[in-house]
Length: 75
Image (cartoon, rainbow, N blue to C red; front, side):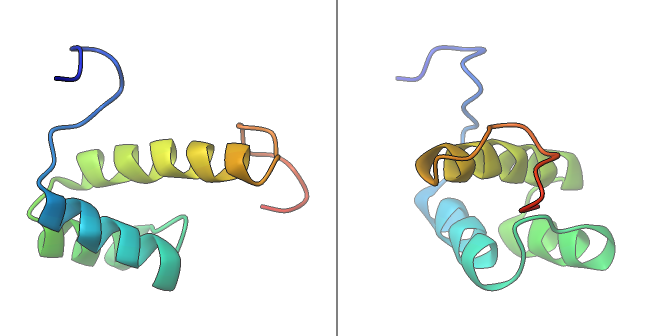
């Protein structure tokens, strides 16, 4: 089981699948209405949804060999 405070969220596989789909097909940085719709579809708060995307973006950038933080010309 994930340790508390390890940055992991307790999401169902269905929620993760929806989030991953949005990440790949909709936006890596959803905001406003987009964020609201993704959150609603996943049954999550906008805050949690944003947190997930933040973590996912960091992972993605690491995998791409980019700095983990925003601010590069590629963002």
